[in-house]
Amino acid sequence: MNIVVKPGQTREVFDFYTGVLGFTLTQKPTDGTSPGGAWFAIDEGTQMHISERADAVMHDDMHFALVVDDFDSVLARLADAGAEWREQPDLFGGRRGSTRDPIGNRIELLERAGTLS
Image 1 (tube, one colour):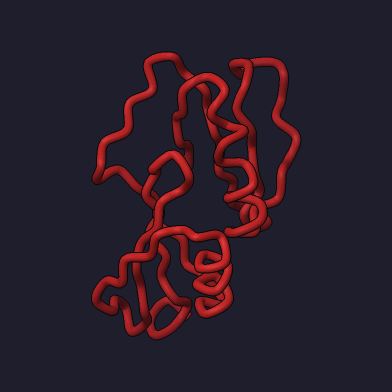
Image 2 (cartoon, rainbow, N blue to C red; image 1 turned 120 degrees about the horizontal axis):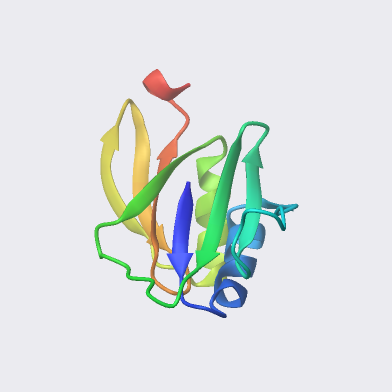
């Protein structure tokens, strides 16, 4: 998955993705990629990339979704960070909701439960 931010905005969201969501910074190749941004490992087979683009546009409904193992722990870290949380109806037999990173990118969080377990 990839989110696009304006040049320099990677710094504004870095701590959110590493500290609050628990992503791990991973090596971004220098060949074949644009300058700026960052790459994160979410788990052994999933990465999230931040790309910096002067023409970055965010639509209010654009988002990505994450299935999380310890839903309550993530909610606590969001609260500690002062991040917004919007509860949504349960889905797949587990809780869910959405938050936004510090520049407004929406992230849907689903509890690893029910058919997602």
